[in-house]
Image (cartoon, rainbow, N blue to C red):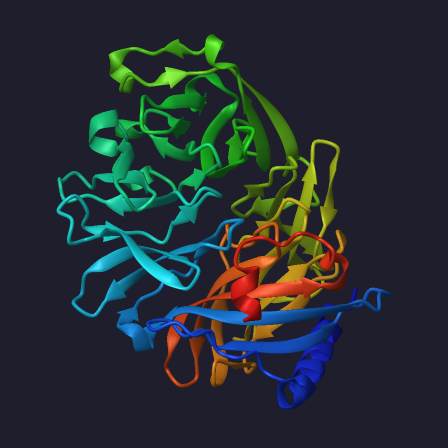
Length: 429
């Protein structure tokens, strides 16, 4: 697959369509009129299928918001979540659903001093977020809310954890939140889950073959993918499966009264295989497939490759021979379609989708493309940005200075007969 050719193809096709495609009318909403732009790009890799992409504006800097999340999230109903700062200087966690914006949490609440760029949302609309806390000791916590109340998942001060080590949360449809952290004094690294009650330790470096853990993600079955470093210093991507609740035992109060469940660990890929070294933050879907990016040798140098797979093996989803200065971790939906954003060596930025199951990503939006009355300068995608209906949440910046959050809807011909729920009716009006 010639990725550079893909960029050229997309540019020429979208450029033509921008001047002759009939635009979708604006949705009549008082506060958040959503401008929808459509273009058509060609899918290649031997296929003649057409993919239409529409863009809906979620919120932008003309509406009194700034400092938007780099990594917004979206659920299967089309609801998006993100962090932004309001005109008064207070920061908020927001949920956007059917063109209505709701504040989930705000720094006007004395419990919170700052929200990090780690917002997630599950299919029931529960938003998870990480916050720094104004109680000293570099305290931090993870919280969830459906908009009617805020639930504490973890507070570093109460649970004997180092606040600065509490990682970004992941949430599944049952409302279980998974994250990694270190115990106070960095005595050990742990992978924890919780839903508002006692935390469960899924994996601990004290009694495992690991010396450190990176970012985690959890699926509907409670399987957790994580980046880990083994005692032999090999790095890799692994999946851990928790034991049944009946097998859980309580630890001592010294560890914050955290429950521990026996678990089995599956090695998906690691640097023992000399074709891989250095891994990005992984994700796992509800079909038990994981995705991440890794560095690989290319000629006398190195390249970056996005991959997906399971215990049976992995599949390249991009071409490492195409040089990128930086890739953001991929987002993966249940069907195995994935999306990611890139920074080129020339400073250009792009959002890519790979729908074929192979290594044929296509740029659906990139620097210089027309969007919402201006042209794109910056785009970014996070780990939880691509839902099962091919809706993709992303952050953008435009040449005219406007910044914001938007959702791209990918209308693949192969998906035409599927029941696309969520915000489909909104984007077609």
